[in-house]
Length: 216
Picture 1 (cartoon, rainbow, N blue to C red):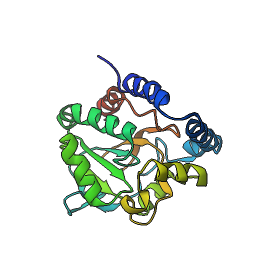
Picture 2 (picture 1 turned 30 degrees about the vertical axis):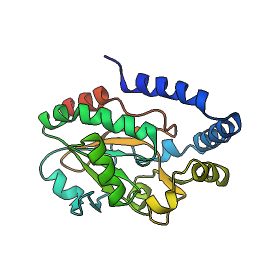
Picture 3 (picture 1 turned 45 degrees about the vertical axis):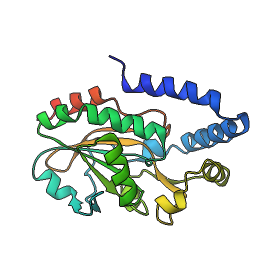
């Protein structure tokens, strides 16, 4: 069975052939500069207490981490938005493993800075059975140490590509989260963490399931 990151790598290599060299250069430079900041190493990691949050779902409800933890462990994944093809691939893969997550008594939720309408469209498109939450302004991502600002030249590229982050992020177009996934136990402690500045790399579902199996 193909792993998620193998699928992402295949997509990346095909995508590179379609992107003009000058845009590739901007993207690669921005990615390297972000990696050089060391932010991934400073983000919340295993052993930390998970910051609490209460965020709107795609259907207009409000979901709080405390309420989720009352029922069992939580798999919390941060993604950039429905406009990001790598996020779409990762979320589809999580949906394929959703039954395995729930079979372990855990709840899966995904968080992005986009407005609920965008999350709803995404959830319907991929038939997501888990909640997709809106962290407008990235306040929750900031608490986890994941929020960063896109540089000017990359923001201009995203505009040129028609991503319209001004609209989908409700006036916060420059701030995005690092791709990250956390396994949080019922006591609210992060027991497993994946954080990477490279948005083309994501947490493997098999590793998430192994982390759930390792919980006491």
